[in-house]
Image (cartoon, rainbow, N blue to C red; front, side, top):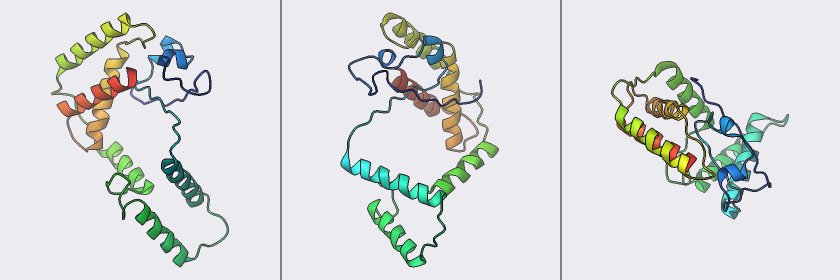
Length: 189
């Protein structure tokens, strides 16, 4: 497959139990699990500051994309933008990185999709083959693990291409493959 499939599954008991394996938490069969490039566990951790930022983001997004009939005064809007900027570090995200609007991100992604098609010519095939072989052996030996299949090699290649595309590169580099491997390891282990 040359596409990404995104899906969500709720834990069997309503909340993810870290003392259980992924397979024990989510009632999905092995053939279904092997079809995903990445398995990400999203845990609902209570954090007052993060929860408040998330709530503000959701409300702001809803208001922005579902405008009401009321016209917002320009001064109020400017004041709100200034407050948002101060709350996130003067135009930066909470981690100090520059803030990128949703619109700019959409434009960047569309540009990358249309203009960038990275090639896999010079990748380290042996590194991927060794990684696959080792991971497969480890997955067979551990109980409750997710089975590793040939599809996971394709996942690494897709993720490597996606990272190269993110940087608008013509070729996939070794650091793209390394990051793809890291993502797969974090996802499946």
